[in-house]
Length: 122
Image (cartoon, rainbow, N blue to C red; front, side, top):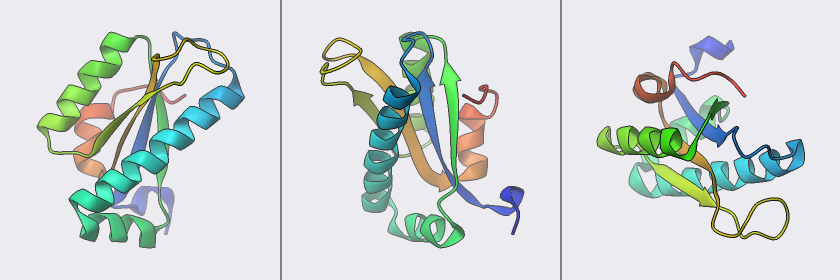
């Protein structure tokens, strides 16, 4: 199986305007991955299990602003995709309450691509 054969994936959308360190981005993306996975498991256990069995494909992309991130969230929700916004606790690099990223899926890749397919990779 190559990367293009995966039927399911999860996408993490990170705000590039916050200028977070690599470690901070990794931590925020991990929060998004775990939280979105749990939401997806509760919403559609069959799709979640298929994603687990395929190898848990994840793609990390970026947006330039909070407004762009919220638009992606809204479009994802209209398609019925599991979405989770990650809000930072403010202990390190950004103020408390800052929305850092968005987790989408896991869900069908072709469905997520309708919303995130044109976003640049982080």
